[in-house]
Image 1 (cartoon, rainbow, N blue to C red):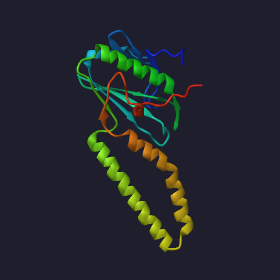
Image 2 (image 1 turned 45 degrees about the horizontal axis):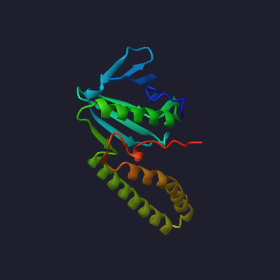
Image 3 (image 1 turned 180 degrees about the vertical axis):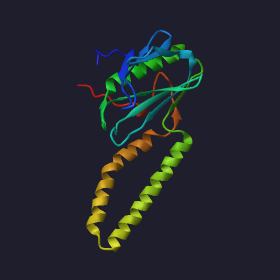
Image 4 (image 1 turned 90 degrees about the vertical axis):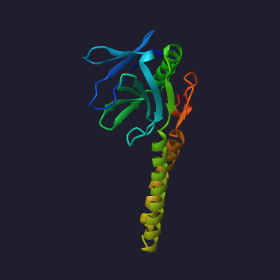
Length: 196
């Protein structure tokens, strides 16, 4: 991990975006997409940092750091790099190093920045309600399938559901809304980096 530059991070968010490089200078966060002009924001122009675990069908270990600007707008940093349709490479070590360095610099140079992790309060309640609703509907479907004598379909559905339960539990645990200290960002809001 010693060859990673914590002041630079490059990734491509999706098929419609261009590969973009972000840099941390002494007083600003800058970014530049391939073929475009340099843009950026001073650290004291950042109003909020939101870190979240946001898995998707193709990237089940995806994390996002959203930087909300005082002038309006936002910057999203992801630990996944789009490489083709439904294909993402995880850049966990580089992402983690960059995000930790960003937080260190914001703690030094930023002013009145709010640090949040997880979903919004309303989003978390909605996700919890949806999760309960899904489990109730699955239970009803399994009971109905068993009553109609379609045991094998019920078993197949339960196996598929059991496969996704660990991701759902991890999502619900990591999406709990809370604030955090910029010098100690929540581990639930960043990917783990395996060391050899």
